[in-house]
Length: 125
Image (spheres, one colour):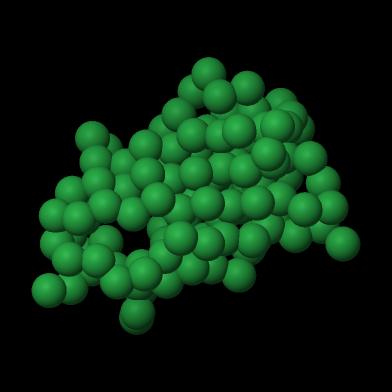
């Protein structure tokens, strides 16, 4: 069974850091662009960051640029999201996702079609 499993969420104070992990099982994540998305209560799911299949290209939402870093370790079939300088508005359920087709650059996050269950991130004092 192909699945993505996120971990690393939790409660953190404003200004703090967290690192999210996403492990792909039942498939090899190598060869596919991967991404992180989030959904806050009462809001639609939004793009956070994507990384191309070969890690050459990364893209970020303006709201997280300069604070979040996406990376991948294909030997471990794992994608990471390092989140620094967290703000209350970063509070959301964070999802990992995989691109629909191989060898993508991650420039079409709306076409990502394999999703994990999400991990909750809460930023609060």
